[in-house]
Image (cartoon, rainbow, N blue to C red; front, side, top):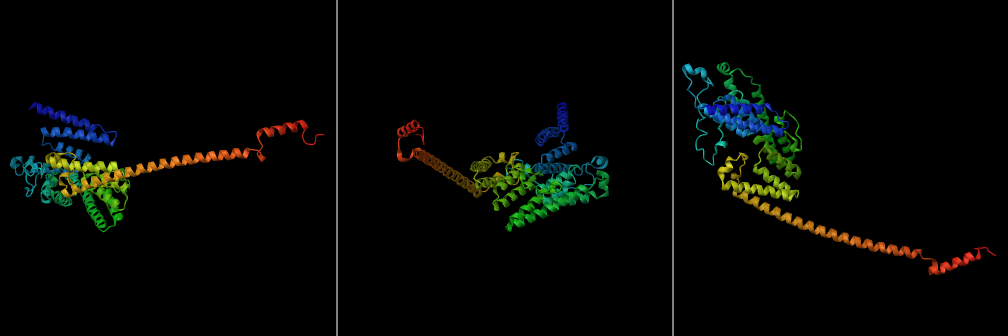
Length: 426
């Protein structure tokens, strides 16, 4: 009705206003994109068939580096498009948004609608199979395709990314397709496939080097992977100074570098790598645990305890309320608290107890050291004072005249001298 039209217009105008305001900083840009996403979602709730809104949402998600959510949105959109397979016939053929698309063989239109309350398989975490991805990519708008393929790579869905690229290339080379959807340039596809090849190769080499105990070179390979999306810029060894593309891939690479640095006993550098991983996925459990262990190694016990307690609390809450844990916006899609085994949970609790014991021992040692320092200072002051008194007595004794005469005898001799006129007087 009219209320829906008004709601759509208000949301669309608000979205345009946010897009026009460039943030003064990265944090301001992020806030703007979050707000933009809210308005686009509001508009899509009224007009879910608007491809323009879907493209804008995908761009906003890419700006926020929310690649898993971006991929999920694209695949759900493709599943919706499957529902119109075969509907545009005869005089309606000209209205078909994706003409010459073969009927879907693997992508089912209800894939994301089945069992929506299944805690073990939440809708937000469902992903398509490689074959279903081939059906999906040819049902997505041209403007979405580059970002969708990038999301597959950054979420480490390498098989899906490779098959999607091949499917797009085959489909877009079709002369009928060029005439129906536009002859769009394919440069982005070759660039993305090259990035996929390098990512898979370098990460695999890094994993092999790590397994062989060559931690220094393994860390270098992981660093190379992290630069692929930065146009070849060199990797800053201070992990927090690098610009990350985000996604599961970059979080895992930072966490892997942390493992290398821990093996090399470079715990402070490892802390920074873990922090970089947690900036991407705040609930990345492995990175959280590794950071806690690094803090313990460098005797930052308070920080270590905070990490362990956070880890244990997340696991406890996920077990107590699996539905809330699955639907959390901060949830890590590939290393969830609900996936932590009982053995891992028990080990973390034991490590927390050990850290607390170490902190108590360190506190007792520090207290004993301070007591010892106070005693040493007291004895030093006491000895110094005694030595100073002895030195003062020695100086007074040296000042006394030879022969041990008193001050009165010396005065009398001086008077006698003065009366006689001094030496040589007659």
